[in-house]
Image (cartoon, rainbow, N blue to C red; front, side):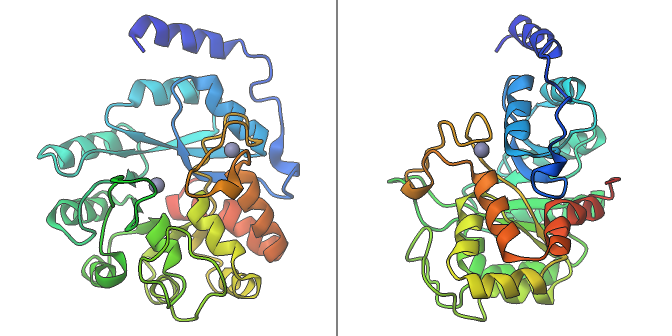
Length: 308
Ligand SMILES: [Zn+2]
Ligand SMILES: [Zn+2]
């Protein structure tokens, strides 16, 4: 959109009557923070999803120059949005622009989703920068195409990311997406986008969440939801063991927080559903109110050192 349209959008958002009036805290028995919410161009549309899904606050994931849009969303709903920024890690100016984003108020890097190796030089320099700037880095790990030639992102997770965690103890990593969550099970070898059935204990994601204080898990998207629904007995135990390391996120693209327009070709069963609602529901039925509150709200505030 051009500058005029952008300003009109802000003006329109300012007069939407329901902004900030709803108190979504009660719906889930705890306020909810959505760590994984992709910035939508019109400020009011961002709020429609939050209010519809019963979410109190969200982290806007942005890419490249997004400061003006972030400011507009924050102005439309004071106190409800923070932001992360990402930038093409293959570009030589990546460190410079990511540093500037943090100076402008970004509280993390993400989501980092690029066609590079998880332990390659492009991402390694950003891991080091995240430590220097004291911000976490949220990474999309995916080894299997959803659609032909879609490509893979941050590849080599199961084989190489253990060494990255060792090499960068001062960097806070937040893992996300297909390969991160499929590797909760020890029998995963990149054969499916969303593996089903009972989980085999000892998967690398489970082990590393236990072994490395600098690794956290973002429960968003169908990948996070799938890991939670495939083996309820495992899930209850997993949530208990990693209750301080898991962060709720939606990565939902539905328009209204109730599933309108949601369509993921790799997960036909989720069509027309809101991923935020689906994952909050499975979390709620799988764990205690105290652990639910940590995952949905408390942990992210502690991690980002922001007041709850
Ligand atoms: Zn992602
Ligand atoms: Zn949704």
